[in-house]
Length: 400
Figure 1 (cartoon, rainbow, N blue to C red):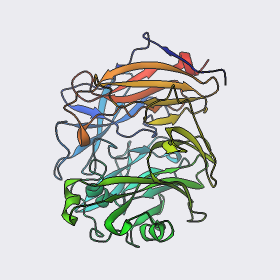
Figure 2 (figure 1 turned 135 degrees about the vertical axis):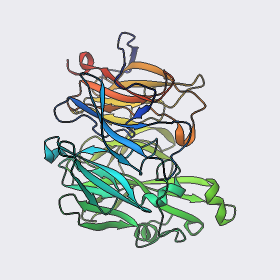
Figure 3 (figure 1 turned 60 degrees about the vertical axis):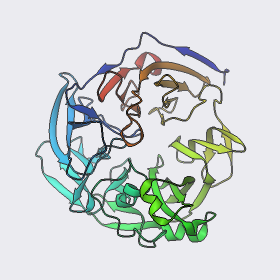
Figure 4 (figure 1 turned 30 degrees about the horizontal axis):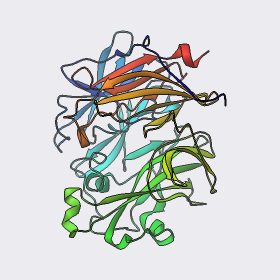
């Protein structure tokens, strides 16, 4: 590395591709919203932004034609939130004709495969949290558990059949065959607790969140989180208690379960390759981004003075750049950055106002995402008054 360097680019301008009066957003980071042709970008459309969605409040699934900035409505969903949207993914083996997203049938969360040309629908029996790079499988979660355990990440109206069980054997992460709809449980909550029991787990509710495939789709990483409630059991409904996080990896067949980070402080991450993970965590007494090796105890801090804050990080398609945002500072501005892995340098792409009245479940994180070539990024922002999707051309930096 050449040594730390930081500079700001004031000439790079983000352009809104959606507009009011309705609000538009994609949701989480690290997911590809551009279709294979680069002509369309997935987005949700909702009429409000001032409260978490209620069970009867639906979001419109759509795609923006980038040349005209026209929003094309495709379907609706009753399973969405402001943090992760509806977990929309293009299916790579469909040549851009199919996407998958989460929905709700009664009190059960499901996923829907939609053909954007014919509007044909096919329903899978479980909601998904990630899709493999080859589009053959997906990882399913219990979003009913997340609805009360991590408000803002579950879905209103979805029930949790294991509500009273702190770590049930029947709940866990599931591997879904996208073609057949068949599912198998890869890992159970009870198995995690029995082998890697956190302190005072008997007083907590344990849950899985953020499963993410590695670059070769043979393993995935996931968080195990739990809350300790010093007050009576009903206090969980008030979102009280301290949150603890551990990072695990496992083969898609359930083999070689590995705990990489013990229960403590860990946050956003992305796979650099099939064996290394970039993650914000407290390791060795240092809270910063670390590069952690799967299957071992190796880790090293990354760009401590440049990437000095937690944020949603993702590698460019060629692995040379890290795209990351920050949470709002004391003046309520979130910063968007590009970090050059080889040169140990960063470029500030912009700072965007985040109105402090939108917090907790209805906050608007930038959640930046790459296009398929690494020439553009998109992000959600509220800096112009309502929630919209923005794109920014970074090809001058990334394709040189």
